[in-house]
Image (cartoon, rainbow, N blue to C red; front, top):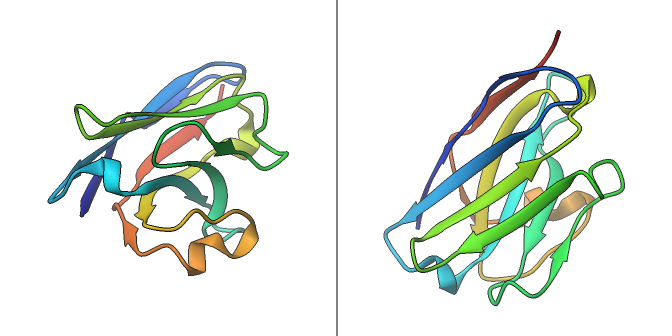
Length: 124
């Protein structure tokens, strides 16, 4: 499966942004979908995961309550809605996919398919 992110950009602190990830080369419904982010200080930090049926999601504490992952398998797209953005959320965001549902810090080492990333800047 090939993944392509979009929707990154500049946003004010406290603002909102929605990232999209379009999948091609296979139905997205076959995959667990993820979001990760990378900064100069943290390599591939886990952000969110959604199960294949969309009923199970998981977020680490640093985004819980502010970020929401969702999926639209009819259109092979999944999303990351980000609210109340903080300066520490600034990063390159990557969508990813795998056949297995992983959570936690080592998820990035296990997930098979990755997009190229979209940059989010949070600044006044």
